[in-house]
Image (cartoon, rainbow, N blue to C red; front, top):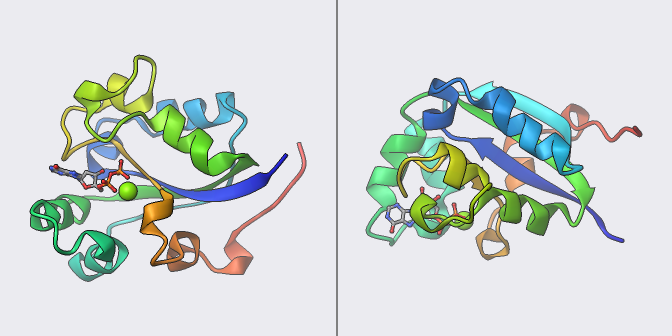
Length: 143
Ligand code: IDP
Ligand code: MG
């Protein structure tokens, strides 16, 4: 049993559609505890730094414009195998390919506006949790 922590972001499209509660419910129903959270409007600079791993992708400019277009909800999730579990409940990057019942299949419209960000090990270049939260802002607690 590996208890992990992972970073999740509810993207501007889902925040604007009043979906924070519904998405939090998915996390909680899957035994992922929310142990830190904040709402924030990313600057272009922050979005560029956070997504630096995608800098040379053709979609980078659109991604940065979208991610800095409105407030996002950022949280740390904790639970058994939290990294892979969060990826599983998020669904595939392209909502049209996402499995039924996943967040992206149910709440996302397009590959650009795809409701949630989740840490994947390829994005290892930055420590995503430390990018947004100090140690004092993260709470490990028992049920
Ligand atoms: P992920 O969010 O499922 O981890 P990544 O490949 O890490 O997917 O890409 C980061 C984000 O960049 C995606 O969530 C999506 O918003 C955007 N993105 C990825 N691939 C494309 C694409 O082919 N066209 C447009 N946007 C894309
Ligand atoms: Mg990724």
